[in-house]
Image (cartoon, rainbow, N blue to C red; front, side, top):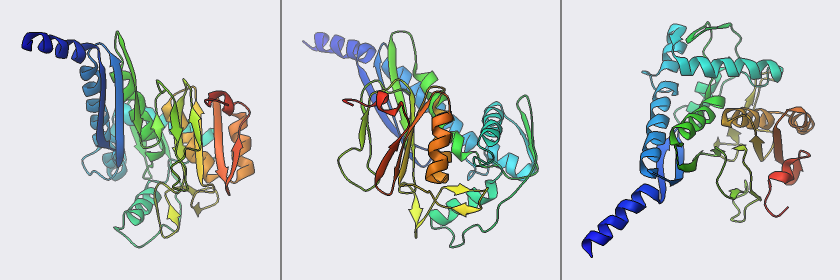
Length: 292
């Protein structure tokens, strides 16, 4: 009997479901896989996420991003890839998604954590140059609107393997889920706002996730204003989680009419914006919802 049970355990380890939770990027990451050698896949995903967090955490003085912000340059392929995408979104959103605001992001997060009682009062401009893996900047950069989505994407790639599939979720950002997933209510209700059934990437943003004294982590440098304009924004994107992450942040910073227009015009993207208790969706959002 012992031998049989041991064999069963070995088979389950190779072919069963594997779940794991761990802390990363100031939130809880969840990894799930089904199939062959699931435990190895989950470990690879966690190792990837933690390695990237160490390189991209602007609050860690040893990270590549901190080196860039303090020295004005760094050679790091991951930072370079994120900066390139950030410059793309800066251009496509007319500066609403702005990676030039590293000082603002640092001061704002310090306030939200309770480490400081001072809010940022001015926004920055600067020049950024990217050449291969080398990045130079004469201003501190804010890569937080992309980093978590990038980490989810890379961890999801590490999770994948022959004969297994799964997904990675981190604080509202998710690789394509393998089953229905709930959109949490921004009002604290236990009943989900919607149940998604999608093979696209998912990201949710809103002031309810991180706030202090009525101030949250969203800002718009084009209007030099702090705070999300809506209770919640959920985006599904066909490109990757980094795009879903960036657009959820961007839409959260825009007035309702501008947010709806940008979301409707963006290719392979659908959005749910909850504003003053009213649901506003793009034309194809309901195709990603279970039991429409």
